[in-house]
Length: 459
Image 1 (cartoon, rainbow, N blue to C red):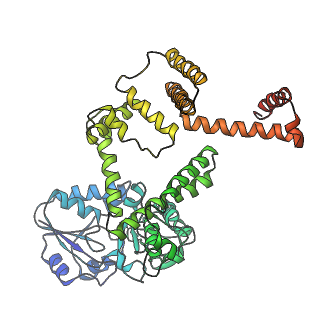
Image 2: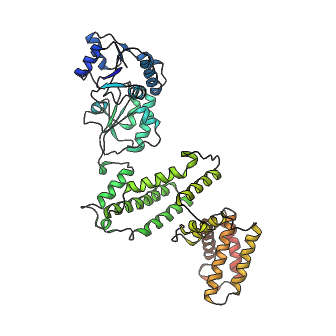
Image 3: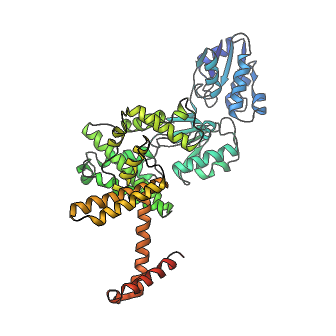
């Protein structure tokens, strides 16, 4: 039987139950003698084995804790294992718990001693924090980072926290107030080194996260919030999502990173806005939306979260489509087409419809036939007499052209947008050259200037 005795974060925090367990144990092991909690064993003359020899040969905390767990499991009889902190936050204890029954006698957590300004609500080891991808936390809660035992890991923690909190944010390093950017510039790091960060108010923050955006919208829609925000409905702001999406696309087309950041945020705001409106109306919650998209990503990536094999982008897309078809229970291509949003721009909708029908074999044999269809539709358009006929045949030209673009893997919406930009740029050149005399120029003169514009605007 292994009994874990937590020593707390400073000498004097060992509990009576912990002291009795140490006194009765056949063998006592102490994780480290390098903190002041070890004073108890020296003062009482307790016969114990310190595990610093494992610490010294380990490359990192993962290896250290794994080696300690294996070492203790190899011991016979009833033993006591003493660790700093509360006992529950030590990763070697967690590893032992996975492999055998243990009894934990807790004490004060690292989170209590962190900044001497309150108890940390979020407690994490520096090594776990660095090992996570995309670590974040609710900054309205206090944070304590333990196990900062060297300058390198301190530097890694600093980079993560700077992204969340900013460079100038203050914290408590072993009780001493520092700025985040100073974290890897301290003189002493050891097993007991902790960093404590106090909770943050919204108005005092320089960096924000997803939770902050949600809370701001809840405030704006709340009892004492903004009258305009409170008056909005799904219908009143629906056009905003379209506008923001196009502004994001424009920023991407311009390779404008600053604007991509801004427009991505604006588009994200629209999603949160709808979620908050829905919560107020009792329709659905933010968690419903997040659960839906997360479930969709897991279920449709069968080649990642399932047993489907996909080694190329094409195979991955096929796996996605197959999973989607199974999920949606499409009985036919028409079922799939009906799910394509009618509110999409016509070119995009045409492109998606043609992709859908091509997957069930409704397709030309070769590109020559595709081009022939465009010629055929142009001829029919030229023969049209009435307004309805012209509209009908004109639409056929467009859809045939979209099909040609699809055959060449060209997005028609993007292609047309670029063509418009190109046309505008060339026209501005012609107009600038003509000045106020443009209407008096002959078509031959205008065509000559247009050819010049084609050369100039390419530079």
